[in-house]
Image (cartoon, rainbow, N blue to C red; front, side, top):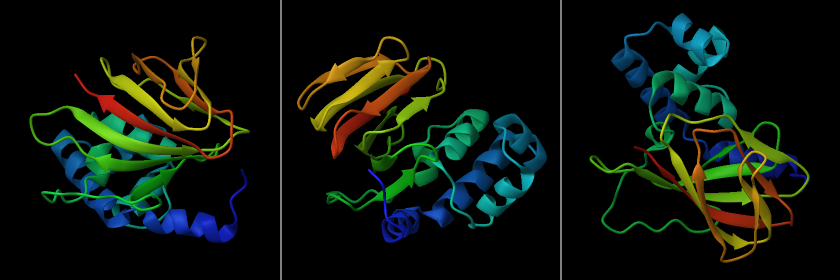
Length: 194
C-alpha cells in the first residue's frame, strides 16, 4: 500500500513532537546521560537527537524505539497523552508514528498509568513489507488481537498467521515481526512491561 505525499504529511503532522522533545529531555536527565552518550548508545546521530529534543524533525518508529531502549523507558512515555475520565480515539486520530522501512504505523491508544505496566496501540499496516522489531526490554510481552485483514505475527521464525478475531501473545524481548498479508490490516497491540 503506497501512501501519497498528502497521506505521509498527515501521518507526520500527528507525531506529537513537543511531547517527544519534553520526554526525551526529561528521561535523558533522569538517566544522567549526555546527548552524545544517548545518541551513541541508540545508534543515532547527535544532531538527530538534538533536533528531536528541540521539537524538530520527523522521527521514525525505529529511532524512537532505539532511544527508549537506551533510556530504559516504555515507548508510551514519549507519547503519553492527557488522560481524561472518558477517552475516545476515533479511527485515523491519535498520536501515530510511522516505521521507516515498511507500511506500518503505531498509534498510542492508552499509556500505562502509574503503578500499571501496559500500553495499548492500534496498528495499521499494509502488505509488501515486514515490520521486523529488535528485542524490547527484558520481560516485555506483546499481545496482538487482529481486527481486520491477515497478518503473520510473533517471534521471528515462529510467527503465526492471524485472521480477524485471532489473538497471539509472545515474548517481545526476542526479535519479532508483524507482516500484513492483506490491505487494510488492523490490530490492537498491548505491550506488557514487567
